[in-house]
Length: 576
Image (cartoon, rainbow, N blue to C red; front, side):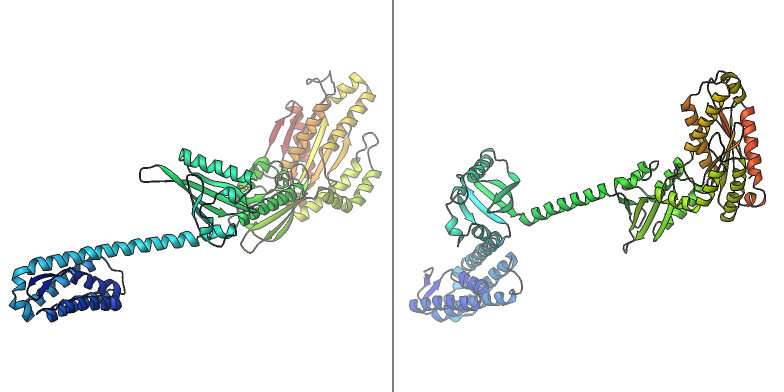
């Protein structure tokens, strides 16, 4: 139908472009069908150039098929279309230059340029249209596939909240056989009226304000859904509907609820158990602990928080003096050794500053995590020590001071020899306190001997209350003088006991008009030794404690002074 007679029996047209495009985009079948129709029409028209025309058409279709096979392993592009247009032009020029009928009619010189140019342009334009059409079809196919097969619930509604289109998941949710059955319906046809009214109000609000609704919780058909709805606008920016994406989060919601319940149950168990639990990662950082773990260590509990390193916790223990068993010397060396031993299976018992005992059981997991369980074993430990020392305690009961109820001098001497020898064997520190009531003769002269006896009973009570272990012994050394020995106790621990006694005596507030302090006070001398001193001359402890007491009294009384049999070291504390 595009043929125009240029010369009797010779026709020119633009059919070479669609023949070439049919070959390239449609392949052999499409090219064969198009060529058959065009050749049949040219045969019917007839004329002297019929054979030459059919030959040229066949060549154009062949060029298209060649392009099809050449590009079948990749997608066609604009360059392919441009090359096809040039190839069609080349076929036409060659045909007009070589085919005899066309040469005799001078077709090349007469209409060669416009005929070639128009076919090239037609080929390029037609190819561009086909490329865009294929691209649109691919995009539409991808969009339709994604929309229909999305695991979420997808839908589009009109301005009145009626469904325009839905995906397959929506039809399954509401038990429809096809998406067409839901077209034109609204939530009022699918849900209870109160829920439909609520959803309708929210959707109309989105379309009226143009503000999207993101991650709104909905409960439909017993399923927990998370819905997001956005307004749909036309080219002029007017809101013409609404697009929605709803995700089924039933399983996630269930898991979150179960996780919360499990977490609450675990938290309840952790909060009500008697033991403290802590977990440290492979690098020594605290990653979990319960409140009982912190309260088990009252002085360093503020440092035992998630994220703290074990070395910082140990450093806090040293700063507060929470553990009197820490050896003298470089504290960083002890911290390093204790930090290293954290990641090993071990059971240990430690004593705190106040005499309480803690059992620490550490177990190492496969990933390097260390879990520590802390128990208060004060009662058990005291019972153990009490059992071990029951014989000595029974003997001490038989040899007590009649006035104060304390062990007397003889019992003290026996216990002192025995305990210093034991500390020497174990190479543990041994501390001694010697206590003298200040201005006691003046107190007796002023208030009488009965009041003096009661004062001594009060002093002995304060001393007994200041020590907490069965192994610690308080004795009346003579007159108004008392002595306390503390096995397995450093000078720092002994100082703590002395300060506790001085504080308790001060709280008694016994009036003493004959004292410069206006109340009953005491001077205290402390001595601590270990190792060679205890093995060779334990009595030096008594000598040093007595010397420290003498110095405390000569320097003003009502104070604590420590002497050591080891390299000279003095510590003076005024407790007035």
